Length: 55
Image (cartoon, rainbow, N blue to C red; front, side):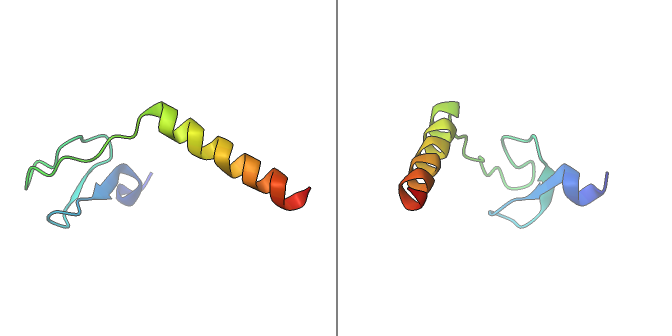
């Protein structure tokens, strides 16, 4: 696994931080968390739009 797959870029300071970090250790930027219900809702919406488009 490469280093790029284990990190994400902080939008506050553009440094690479661990993917599982909630807060950037360099600048203190707090990464937003999406609740599971939002992710499920988005996938349901995409599915319904695809059904509507194809049928």
